[in-house]
Length: 292
Image (cartoon, rainbow, N blue to C red):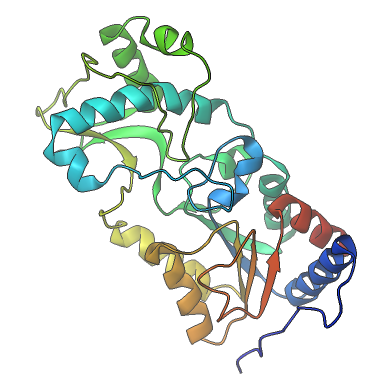
């Protein structure tokens, strides 16, 4: 039986904190007795200093596409120069309360797993164990033509050897703007050197799904199986604009499972969700945790 959507907009204005607490209590009620799979997006990591693409206060940034990266060496040069700076910002980031609560809920049996659209590995750092990195993660670099793979730390050593003191020169120019895919604005990238695959001479690319690239089928199948094994889908910190994540909302509602959404701003799932909460992810989840 399908769960009827719950309208949470109050008839009369109330104090924001009281209203948020009421909505959080409603989510706790929805979760109680159910095992949830959690679908996360960039909004869960903003509290860790990693910006998102589509939040209300986000800068307008256009990420590099797969077609650009593989078709033009100049695009690859620009990407690796910027990533050489930006990935370290992501590596230094620490999990925030949202990541910690989701890991705690997994250990308590309330959450069966996390499907994340992020590449920042913060769920793993926080202690979540059943994590599907839908779009990959920044931790490795792979050849698109053969099976060669190298971890990102070793690859960084190679870039540093080819481009001595590049990061120091960038840092000397002042503050650096970063993006959720470990990109960074670094100014002029002319002359930045990057290696090709040492095994076959092919193109090396981060193990991240770029825009215009398909998520590997086995990864999608694993995520769909996780949704099938859950009683509830909880989307946190994602606008669900991208189909690769939104498909799991459709899967859940198509089989009668309730969907709850916690996000700043409207999402693509608002018309399908049983319950929606507009608010800061960490604040809302902390209230839900207390109510549980």
